[in-house]
Length: 271
Length: 357
Image 1: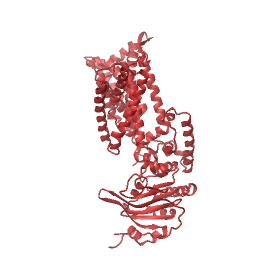
Image 2: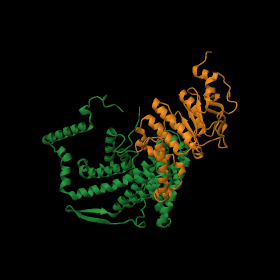
Image 3: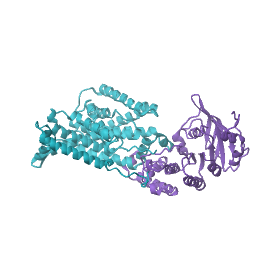
Image 4: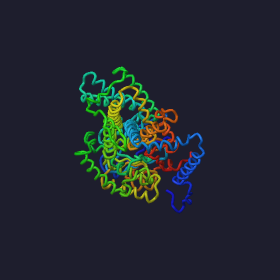
């Protein structure tokens, strides 16, 4: 299948604000394997943007490029008007990009509270010296940030597991703690890599509600990868579809659903 | 998490406490019978006589335990250096022992060149910081994301580099630690207790106090501060740490520098008891059994492990050593560690390996 990227949208639909991040002609290779080939799309301020596609389509690689884990060989990423060929993870974090991972990446030995507190790392400025003394300004700072973290814990309804080491929690809760850690960074752009993978129906509904609340209450822009089509179609404002590392469609959920290439990619096509 | 209703009826013998109780009972029974039948008195000499000696001369027992305690504290300090780096970067730093020697040599070397004692301490701290930055730049950064064994081998490289570098700068001769110039106390305190005389070296008391303070401070630092949290975070997951904006490079410099400070203090204390020479590095290897006992990731583990090894080997040497001609102090620690590896590989306090299936 040799698909040219088609933009079915034409003019932006339900686009909420100006472009926050745009990916321009990104290509990523691992040796001879082409993970992503010449993909461009944009994410607008305040929207929920879904990235979907069959397994191995390059969705996670795309997120890794956006937050600097991978450096694409070709193409550029423009974030908040700043154009970069290379993004570095801590620069992305400092710029306001937070993320969660497909296979939860938490600090397993640490408590829920400490895990979410790590999200405040970049917001805490007091130096090594005060930290070592654990007094004065560093202590006040710690208290102020602890308050923010407690709010996040309330928001995600995980008060009861505050002190437990996260390695012992059930998977659904771990995903919620990971979301909490990302939220603690007060990100402008939140990247969620399969936030609902491995969850039961009830947990999925909870997670959907949290994602919508984050988007509505804090105005956080969200880009998410998800396999559950029902969830994707309900949640997202716009959807970009990847297959074999190429973009095959981009538009509103309804447009994408009706796109023949997308149907072929998901259901297979008779050759 | 298995449901209580579906759980099979508990097997009494599977309970570790019951098992241990049975084993102890069997051993005691065997001993009692054995000692009765024992013609050459071997079992008596091993299992009865040493304890009788302890009861008869409690002052000797106290003296032995105290000496064990002091060397235990120093083992714990060295182990602490290992734990710091292992906790924060997952690297087993073979060079910790030589860092102790190097720090002490630098301090004494600077003093001999005419630098005042306290200025020399500050300068040595500077040298340890420079060392931390250099190791991060030259060794760790190029090897990031490599398997642990590669980083471990790299610390061997650091070890031999530091040996050569230290020798060429300061020479290979043993040196005297500048204990007096640093106002460390000298002499001994004699205590009249239990109908005998127990003599405590003041430098040993100082070492125990300083080590305890430092350990408490480090534990609090790790537990309650942003940087402490970041250190633990890096140890758990590199990618997650990166995603929240923790800079690996900065964290590595901090842990290696902290380990350098611990090394300097250890070097001063140990140097004041004997002298400063490269032989200290062999002593530093004692930290291995301490770590196996205490767990590689636990600061309290390093302390308790150090004390058990220190006291255990002194008691072993004094009461059981003569039975086989002495000298068991040099291997008893490794023997204890071997036993732990067989029955509790994560150590007394180590992180249990948590895995959900």
